[in-house]
Amino acid sequence: MKRTLLLLIILLVAGIAIWYGFNEYNRANASLNSTKAAATVTAANLLTAFEKDSARAVKQYDDQVIAVSGPVKKIEADGNPVIIFLGDAGQMSSVQCSMDSSNADAYKAVKTGMTTTLKGQVAGFRTDPLFGTDVILNRCVVATNP
Image (tube, rainbow, N blue to C red; front, top):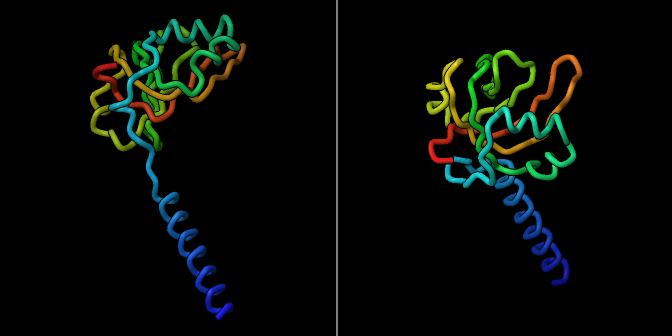
C-alpha cells in the first residue's frame, strides 16, 4: 500500500513537471502592440541621454517599454530578427530596434529615410569612441498609437 501511494505521488509530480516544462517551452512573449509605452522620446534625445549620463539613462529606461520616433537610417532584413536603425544619417550613433517577427507585415512598410515611431523594450546600450552609442530595443513593433 505504501509503495503504491509513493509511486502515485512520484507519477503525479513527474506529470506536473512535464506539463510545466511543455508550457514553458511553448510560451510566446506577449506582443507590445497593446502595451502602453512608459515614455515617448525621439531617437536623438534618447541617444543624448545615454551619451551624457549613461547611469541615469539606464535607471530611467532599462527594461522599460518606450516609443522612439526618428528617421530610419538603415534596415537589416537579412537575418531574423529584422533590425531597424533609427537616428540621424550623419551620426554614428543609433537606436537599434530588433523587430518582433510575429508582426512582420507591419514593419515591411517602413523604408529607409522615412520618419517612424517604433515601440520596444530597452535591452541595454553600448558605447564605442569610434562608432558612437547604440541603444538596443527588443521585441519592437511599429507604434501607431504610442
